[in-house]
Image (cartoon, rainbow, N blue to C red; front, top):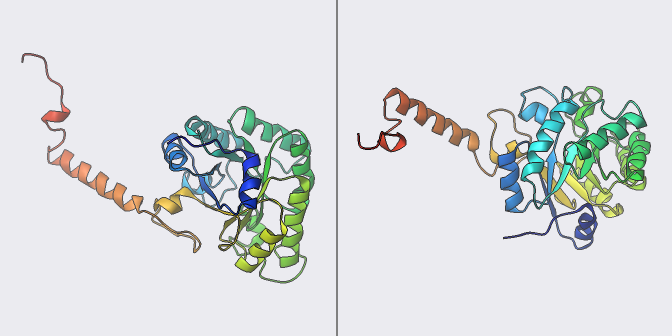
Length: 276
């Protein structure tokens, strides 16, 4: 069944219509095609690939080259969803010129239709400059994985009152700064549900939550958490809708057994000389 293409401008309408926005990460052609045909609104090629695809302990080692590679794969599969590419750590923080160059590469070379970057007040000028040259920007505040060293790990933000980093009032300021700078949407990660609700009610742009409660305008999860493609730690906010790790293990085990028992390949999997 054909679906209308999702554009940046559609998300504001969805917020106004109280139509929840569904967003998933993807890193390759097959899963991007599955999610796109299932009707997901936004596909994100996130720097989370460092952890779930590459096995790193954080997102920090991910490079522009790696994001571009995965973006190209997903872009080939995407027909319906809006495609967003993450700007990795230190690809946009050095200068406005660096941010422009790398955001432009995600769109020109990778096929992204928008970029995402982390940070609130301190990133407002960068967001504004990108928007000025017609590069759509999705903001990201709260638990920002590129800031794990400052935060002391992946810790919930906004529980404490105050205007310091990670405090409630600061996150309200961050949300306002991102919106005023021209971002079209805002990811809220790892913050109390009550604070996420307040930000969502105040903001004219859609909020997309991950570990931010049920009242955001949309939700995003990492595909490996949704599909059960991990045998390790799973965040509290993640809900597995399948257990592909178990299924893949069972399939591989069956294949290995049949090879060792010479049950595979069978005659139907073989080619023969005609007439022999």
